[in-house]
Every structure is written in C-alpha cells, then in structure tokens.
Amino acid sequence: MRSFTRRTARKFTLAGAATATGLLLTACGSDDGASGMDHSGPSASATASTAAPSATPSGPSAPSASGAPASGDFNDADVMFAQMMIPHHEQALEMAGLATGRAEDPEVRKLVAEIERAQDPEIQKMKAWLKGWGRPESAGHGSGGHGMAGMMSEQDMKDLASLKGRAFDRKFAELMIAHHDGAVAMAKDEQKNGRNATAKALADDVVRTQSAEVAALKKILDRL
Image (cartoon, rainbow, N blue to C red):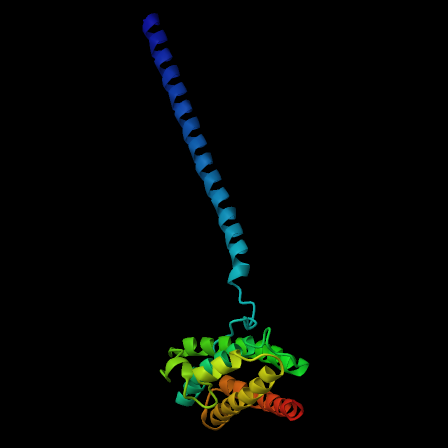
C-alpha cells in the first residue's frame, strides 16, 4: 500500500513538472511572437516616415536643359510653328558652325556666338513641346526643311563653306539676314494664329532677337 502511494505521488510529480515545462515553453513562444510584432511595428513606421518626404511634392520643377512641355491649349498653328522652326534653327546652327576657322570680323564672330547660345536651347524646347503634344518633330516639309522661308539651298551652304575671311563674313551676313527674315515671318504668323501661350512667347523672342540681329548684320555689311 505504501509502495503504491509512493508510485502514485511520483506520477503526479512528473505530470506537474511536464505541465509546468509546457506552460513555460508556451509563454516563451508568446513572448517571441509579441516581440516580433513590436519590432515590425516601429520598422514599418520608420520606413513610412523615411519614404514620406520623397512622396511629398516639392513644388513646380525648374525647366530642364531639354525644355518642358508647353502646357495649355494648342492648335495646328502652334504645331506647325515648332515643326518648321526646328529645322530652320538647325540650319542657322549649321551656318554658325561654318564660321569656325573662316570668320574674321569680330562682330560676325560675336553674332555667331549669340546665335549658337540662343537657338540650340530653343530647338530642345520645341522638341519637348511636340513630344508633349503627341505630334512628330517633322511635318515633311522637304529634306531638312528646304523650301521654307529663308532656308538656304545646298549650293548656298557649299558656297559659304568655300569662303574665308572678309569674303566669308560678307556672304554669311547676307545669307543670315535672309535666314532671319524667314524666321521672323514664321514667328509673326505664330503670334497671329497660334493659341499656346508658351509657343507664342517664344515667337515673341524670335521676332525681337532676330530682328535686332538683322539690324546688326546690315550694319556689318555696310562697312565690309
């Protein structure tokens, strides 16, 4: 009887120990789980707070070197203005490039630098407009835009390239006057018929700056 009592007591003792061990392990598992949840909470908050500044608008961005889309309404005149002025400007830059090693007159060289400084950025602006408007850069006005107002023929460009010194300066002035006159005429058409405010503002700039350059070129011709 006493032996049976000792065995029964031992069984209860072992069962109690096992139950305590199970409870302890369960408690540890619960602590780990809670700790993991607490850790993920702050991390998510930190991530959100870190990401938040990048998602916050910083205001209107400054126009890039390649220009920005011309916002607002536009019409066919705006599109045509950009499509025609791009090759027109490109030829002006080609003519200006011929001045390197050929131009002699300081004022001609100064005007060449001004043309290069102004017209390349304007080309990039107009390309950006057309892309934003979903229109092609070219409207198919012949090869390179030849045939438009003020555009030089291939022979004109070859003749200019064959000259140097004073002869180049005079020929360059004559051709660039005609070229600028064509650009001014296109810009005035945009002023009259265009709708987009940004395109019309560029047309204003073309009329103002290229008219002034024509006056300067005429003065150069008078003394050459």
